[in-house]
Length: 291
Image 1 (cartoon, rainbow, N blue to C red):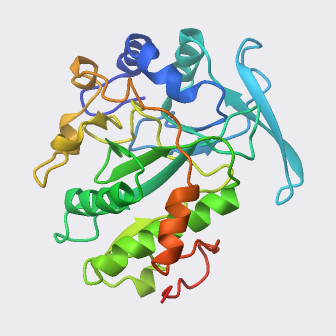
Image 2: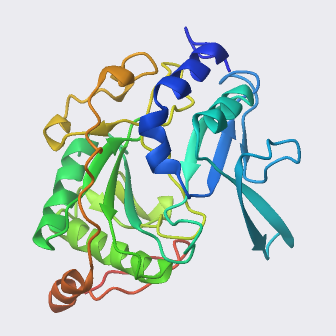
């Protein structure tokens, strides 16, 4: 793994130093791995199925996939040694599921993915708008950099909801936010329907859907890291490239206390009364207005 100024040894050192922060976000979660065997300018590939040569001590979670008609064996990391093996395999990015292996159909995290589409609105402004809607629903949200240009918002949940229910809820929340700022935001997943509006990506509520883990390195020339933030750090002048393999370890862990898992029934009732009844929708479908 070779990034500008960084080596495979730097990646291994980062994983070892940051194991105490990385592992809580990975433990008991199947992982999709992004490998860069020849550096970020070389061929990169996503790995879901562990090779037979993987250490016997590395956790595994097997899933039958209808599309490929085979069993996929995902990695499940639990130790510094597991992270060291990832570094040896040139695994730059760690993407965990939003559910755990004991109840894979019941996620405990709901994520919103925000990426800028132009100079206005800024991704920071969009994140605060979305947080305002979640605050109205009495749901607390955490925020982190994507490690690239965007921001990720996470809502911690009790494990009582299906992925389908969460996707419908995420779409309803996003529609409410986009209706408050119709010239700046959209929930339309199809690029042709977005214009230059910023997408509130509600589609991550799906089994085997992932985002980069908190504190995961990213494939970026600056050696960036997906870094947990305080909300007062989410400003228009936020520079995600400031959080790197070198600088991220010196930051406090703003996700060390995530707060208790939350329930959604009261929020669903509020949304429904406002005309945004949650309804699951395929991200591939045209997202029609709710009212």
